[in-house]
Length: 438
Image (cartoon, rainbow, N blue to C red; front, side, top):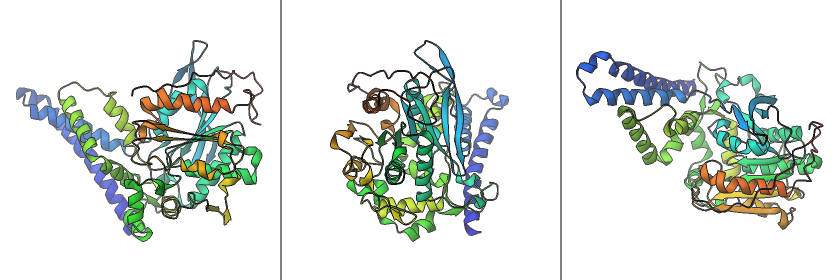
């Protein structure tokens, strides 16, 4: 009951701030204040609008908002989000581009489950859709999953990825972004032992903590300082009464958001101050850069307590994947069993979450993969977000990843048992990427 009350108290604080923003906006917008044109009323109204919207976004799941894409035939093709496999804690969804032939490049994006929804990768999906068929993992908000659905820890997460890869077939190219990178590596190793024919063709790991000890960051330092008992006492709560998952132990998204913001408090404070001033000056719009970023950034989801705690304990503290000791249901998964999957790692030079060195450690663990099938890219001047979104991703990293996928394509033939019997669009080789200024 104690942790349920804490969860509901946190939701009450959020709801109160949203109400205060709405009240300030309404009160400062009364026409009567036009008789006393004091700038205070404009600032108050602007503060209210920004505050109300910001706190409301925290409990809203964003929409994908990908309506159509342009194709080589000169037409805009409608995009429909389809659920391919639906499981209690996550779904596999496909971005079906209507009227387009199946593409030779087939990509599975493994989205992080670290507090944000999969829509955090919206720009990544949008950039890949013109040149590939794209699937993505869509993790569910733990607060909306009844306790009767059971547990979901790091081993369950790994087996979900295994099922998704098997569903899509061996011609899939997996791209894991941030948190799931080590788990995607283990899932591929699991398939290498249990069902080799179902392994993906390529595996691209972007900014993930394969070996957290390879380079210290604030995230890894925190994991070292705090014991598991302290962590459980500080951050684990039970879902409150207003949600379907009432009583489920979770790491709340609001708490994760507070952690994210605290890492760059000055930057976020300045961004909101500038936004309020722009609103008060009449220079802002509802679709400006601030809202486009923060509508996504502030939308957070809860993680199951067992997933969060097992991730910290086994990946960050126990270094089970870094030392190739990870087990599923008591059986060790040997990363060295991967022999036929090409592996690429991508890191950002200024990544303060998964610092350079953490992700490239995967290449040393893949002892069974020939050196010629291993590749690493360190993106100069790129932070964590920039290596999968923004100009660094679009101009430099994305072309390299597509080239990597093309290099190991088997002539563009659809080998998946679920692929349609149709003519495949030939792979168009991209020119090698050149360094571009962001």
